[in-house]
Image (tube, rainbow, N blue to C red; front, side, top):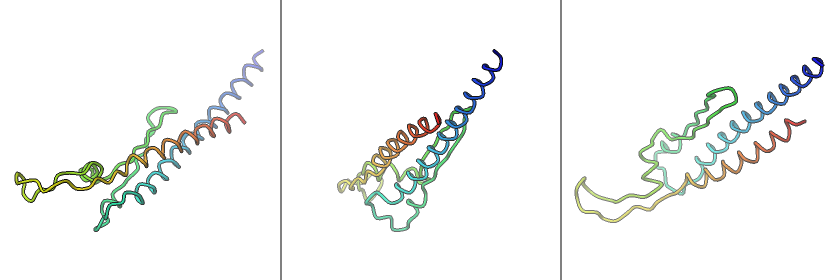
Length: 130
């Protein structure tokens, strides 16, 4: 009876290890693809290139089996202005000359990353079953 219990534990551990590795690979590849995607999209003219070069990925392992990936830009204040547009003024409290065009680039990247992550997680579960 203990032999069956030991075999079952070994099978569950192998499944968990394969699934854990698959989830980690899914997160890593999704974040890398998202980084490449957001650096190429946008439609805005980044004259200095600092905004596009400012994108970073932060991967953290919180607890056993729990991982978090964050895609962000080091020039965070510019992100909101580009995404939403803003008023154009010559001085701080002067008259408004209109609004700048918005360049939504985060939403399409986020949706693509979520779809890719879902697909990769499903593949990881299928492959972990063996």
